[in-house]
Image (cartoon, rainbow, N blue to C red; front, side, top):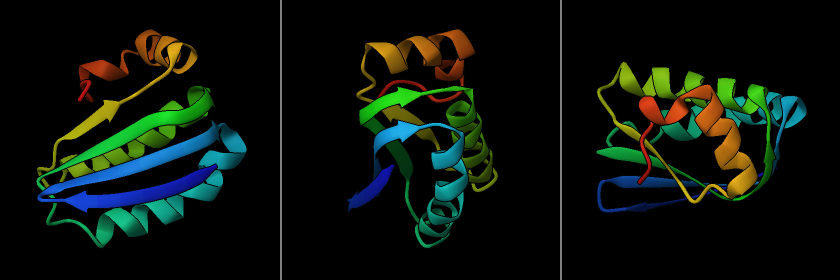
Length: 102
């Protein structure tokens, strides 16, 4: 999995691409936590999932962990760009209830 980011105004956009499975989630947790720690002044964080071609429940768990971290700082989190397969996993998990579409 590849992680890129861009900060525009007070919005931190995080672009995830590739597969977000158990292996990728374990490898990316530390990278994302460091990125978020360095940008705690963001007004909101948007995870752009348009580059993901696969995500399983481990990916959902990884996103929820980042959501909880950001929520503790009062930073809202949004999801954007999920393809049909990833969208199906998000809908089944109910993730949009806490991380709405951007």
